[in-house]
Length: 274
Image (cartoon, rainbow, N blue to C red; front, top):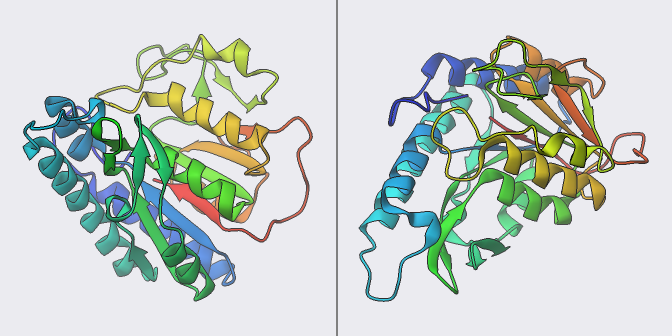
């Protein structure tokens, strides 16, 4: 959403600025809102990571240039997002995942959460992002924002997770390719198997698996009770992010809920990925 995935290292400055303003608007209308933000690496990190196969790891004695270049690309986009949020009046604090993340066989095993908790307790807005990470088994890998949200959700227990992407939720086909694709308004762990086969990879280059990996990870979160509900919405609809941040029942996109959805607001933050 915040980059053109078909063109390497191409930010969508207008979209970044508008979404930053929407976060600021929601916080202004509800000053006590606790929000953890995250963004992917888009055409910055993903393109470089794919070129060097960073997700698959680096053998002992191998060339680590690709790891360094991928991390630098992810950080470059993060700087743009951080600056836009500050400009919009959001007291954001960027937290570099690779500074603490530890992976094992491509999966995130540990990441420091203390600074994130401290930022939230002080009314700040922590910002994480898709990044490189060292791996005990394969040398290195990529950790997506969904990986980080899944890890942190088990510890922070957010009321909601909002994923903001290109399209307005989950469809039975890629709506960027198939105009007749039908939106799936609601997914539960019980219905996930019915829609899994219909989900395809993201439109463009995405080394973390596209929509399929996002939905699978989010279904697991609500099934385990680590989040009450997950929204997948389009960032192309002006004002939608603000409305969903303020109203869990806003009729946008796709919602993923557990079989027995809990009611009422939770004490945890609402992680939001742009």
